[in-house]
Length: 237
Image 1 (cartoon, rainbow, N blue to C red):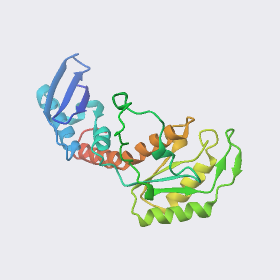
Image 2 (cartoon, helix red, strand yellow):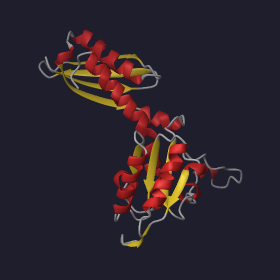
Image 3 (cartoon, helix red, strand yellow):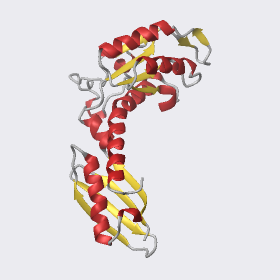
Image 4 (tube, rainbow, N blue to C red):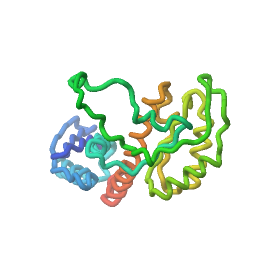
């Protein structure tokens, strides 16, 4: 028996489907979700489906997983404490945003912008500048990156988003800044915009990188816990 198992973790139930490659049989079941520890329900779902089909942990040949852990983290604003490092003069691009607003609030004079995921005191600038073609107008000031790293360390950030102007054309400054930050902030997750969203328009690239940075530590811990539980249960990972 070789089973392909797919698991979707929801807020109320964790759904699981198993397909037996040998017989072509498909079985579906569900178990209650464990929102405070989603990995627990994931493993319980596998145990449950194995009981239904009469299988054993070594019979699992393929695992597919869908989860709303990252989505819920953002909706509930429970992301990691995140800092932003950006080009000098562009600290507030993230909060200025664009002119767009929800259509239903287009003429609402009382509309207020959502609170940013990264408050202003955790947004820092470093001296560097590239032109639109990726040529260095101002070389990266490594000392300013080191000072920012020290400031973020003092604020006990868990994650840092780095977004420099035009880094999608030339990522060299971001790479160097990322190296300095990783050395100064061991254990802190570093997200570089040219890796997360290598596209033009700094606002969109900044917001995407911040979202990645905010959820990365939560997802990393979740997956590490999940791998540990699967290994303990004898389920191939």
